[in-house]
Structures are given as structure tokens and as C-alpha cells.
Amino acid sequence: MPLWEGRALDSVEARLTIYRDHYLPLAMQTGAWRWLKRELRRGKRIVLRDFGAYDHVVEGLTFDQCLRNPHRGLCHAFILAAELERWFSGEQGDR
Image (cartoon, rainbow, N blue to C red):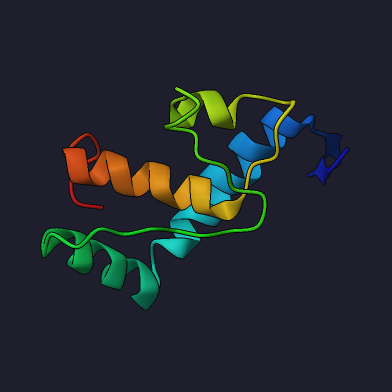
């Protein structure tokens, strides 16, 4: 189990605490993030490839279901894609 500030986290807690709450805000400060958003604005189709990724759409799963499933791996691309989808659909404003 990963430790975070001296506390053991299960896989779902680690995803929420480390990936979503800490990794994502840092990733969103990069030029690569700005590039992804710009390409989406231009109507480009974006495919994020990552080791451990799977086609959650074909499996009928939402990003939140993937994030909270302790029995499947979760790669960085899922975290990025979920936020891009929220941004593109207008749920999170223009972060």
C-alpha cells in the first residue's frame, strides 16, 4: 500500500489523493496540457495512449467508475482524459 503523509492508502484512496488531487493540477500547468486543450478547441480528435489503459467506453464504464475500481489498473491517461472530457463538456469551467 502506498503511504501518503504517513498514512497507508488503498488503491482508490491513492488515486483520489495522489493522481487526482496532486498529479492532475501539476499536469494542468504544462505546455502539453495547453496543447491538448488547444487541439480539442480546434476540433481535433485526441487519443491518449498509456500502458495499462483500456477502452472504458467499449466496456460501458465512466471515468469515475474506472477511478474507483480497485480491481483494475489506472494509468495517468485516464486522469488526464477525464479532466479533458469535463473541461470540453463545460463541467469545470476553463481550468
